[in-house]
Image (cartoon, rainbow over all chains, first blue to last red; front, side, top):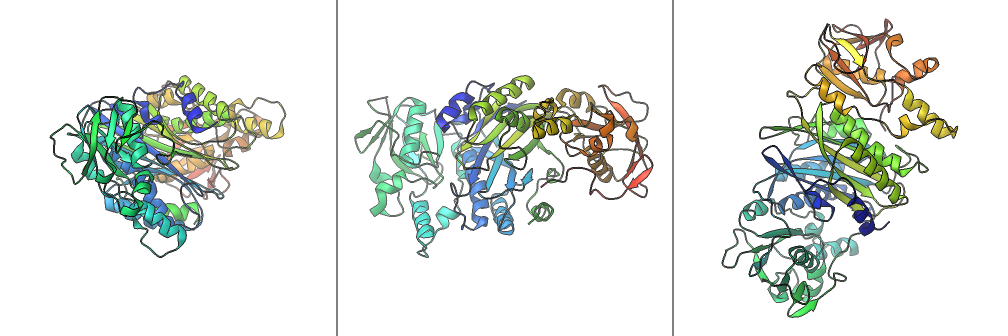
Length: 289
Length: 289
């Protein structure tokens, strides 16, 4: 089964009413008067990280990608649960885990440790508490909203290339992505829609437009990119973990962000880039394996 | 690193105050007025299941083992989050998942789907709500308590052997273990200590005695076993997922269970079996790889 077929099959199971997590990046679980946000990401050797990568960076990324999913829901992280396959460089893994948990002030709750052979696989569940209800989603954009993105795109791409090609260039943005946890909590009360840009700006904007059943018009020149000569690539490369969000017209963003376009009634395509319609998700970003 | 070293290293990280989950089987997380129980188990091909096993059974076991950890905390399951590595027989995996979620009335919340090569690895997080606080633990046994176990031990062993040897014998107890969810909730208000017997009765009783800093005296002839001729093996074999618990003297168990011994002041060894001291965990059950 490919991923799409598998997810289609899962949709026939007993699902929680909030189980958009099958295609969205986090589940929303109401418990009494509390609203929890739950995310799970796996990293597999050879698919999501290279065997020669520093395992401290792998641990960092495993946590940061999950915290980024919480950030997109405006959630305060409460803790993480780790599924760890023992192997080489576990010391470095623990060091990286220590660094990322300390940086974000998030505690380890527990988990499971198993033996295994290469390729190794790790899983991580992050649990957060909604800072606002209803919880922001990718589906809430409104006509007339302004579209924003935090940070600079393409930095992770340059970092990946430096690592892959052994140029000695700075690979921090790829190796140690930052989750926009505080920004997400600041945005939650104001934004109509939020998601994290994990698979490329254009692909994620396409998905947000589809989920909101509207059209996003984006001006590529407004997008802050790490290297202007690589602008086209930067719009399609993932792993930056910035936040893409929409605000009602006239609302100033409470966090540093660039306005890159506007939300329009549903037109010919979900996405217009510099006036050109993009009708298909193919080629817009990183489609998951 | 071996598992013990890895867990020792994790203990130096930012830990949640309830992160006994590193050696206990579940984490306790207080959120506002709610108390959540969170478990995570991984299953790895070749370690925890055989490549030729029915993937529906693997999915069942992945869920049931986590629900068993919730049961030992007296928790009501709220949902599960799945980390799934795509591969052969995903149709059967989904069918087994459907069956176990329907059986327990537990919804799928979300998760992550990744591509991978053999050996496959799956992770599952189960989230439950405590039905009683303080949450029962393995450390709460008191001097004078009676020791009980639910069900019949050794059935999973016989099922495993039938599967391994292709005898055509009934492998249900091994392939489709039952988590004692309702029993756990019934026991939570009464029991001083509860844990699930996943690694063998003697080993888990040894651990409960160690955690409670007392001595458990067990009469092996009182333990219900599937095959009396295999009693010695049945006491040491895991995978039955029955509940081991202690009740104050004179308290009748609210669920079907056999009284197998009594809790005594800490003596020469944590465990006495038919009057013989057992000072070492080695050989008592399944020590995790």
